[in-house]
Amino acid sequence: MPTSTIMNEAPTTTEKPKKDTAAQLQRLTTESQNEASQGLDTKSALEIARIINHEDAKIAAAVKKALPEVAQVIDQVARSLRDGGRLIYVGAGSSGRIAALDASECPPTYSTASGQVQYIMAGGPKALASAVEVNEDSEELGQRDIARRRPTRKDVVIGLSASGRTPYVVAAVAYARARGAKTAAVTCNYDTALAAAADIAIVAEVGPEVVSGSTRMKAGSAQKMILNMITTGAMTRLGYVYENLMVNVHMQNSKLVERGIRILMRACDIDRETAVNTIKSAGRSVPVALVMLKAKVDKPEAVRRLAKSDGNVRLAIEDTILEL
Image 1 (cartoon, rainbow, N blue to C red):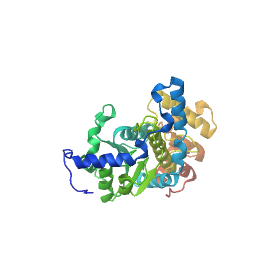
Image 2 (image 1 turned 180 degrees about the vertical axis):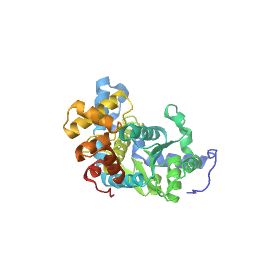
Image 3 (image 1 turned 90 degrees about the vertical axis):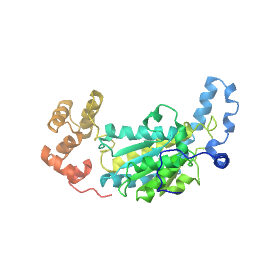
Image 4 (image 1 turned 120 degrees about the vertical axis):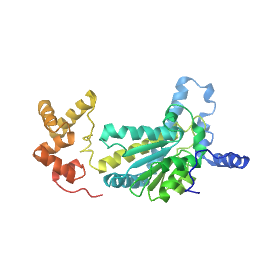
């Protein structure tokens, strides 16, 4: 696949690619018909819910088979973010919307810096709410959009595609890999073009959908679970979680301020008044407040320790250096 041509127009569709697409889709388990949901349109509401629930129960088992690859990506993302790199998701349709959701939730949850976790969506931001899936057939647009982010060897680029064949995503991942970025694929079919384009392939084969081809269902849920693992795992490895508490929470509204107070109360076994006063003296930073209380140091020393440990709260308390 070429990785250097960047164009603004989608490729012209011919009869041969249509035939190729039909053959490719026929081989995908995510596009095949599900015997368990035959006659779905004749079922009652409760029967429909039971069928969907029964199929959804298979998702975690499919994801479990891919945990070794998920772990590799977690460590790669943690190393990249520690060294000043970025995590960049690339997706189209439902996969792109799931990627956008995960990327947008990292700043309020873990106080990630602007641009540390990004997403690229076929069709741009308007595709989050409107169907512009035609763009996902363009390799050139995929290359163009990732080229605008200028991926380097510091970055991790993760392509999401339930089918594993989306041209936009495959081309973007191949482009990023050719420029030294670490790459991963998240798919729900084995032996796909996207898996071949990436350094690491995470495959959760969830099988046929209840509504044939509706990959926003089981495939979408599997992808969401995997992205939850990747970002939660990476942020935990970086020390933005202490015990199992969200200590790097970004306190920008009343709910998150209250969460920060409760986190400090639990972590340090202190009363509310002490927690509130310490957070104030720490400049509204839960990590700084936690290090102050746990290590029994003042704010400047807590700040110094956090800088030394690259923001890892536990290592700042112990005054050691982060190694990944």
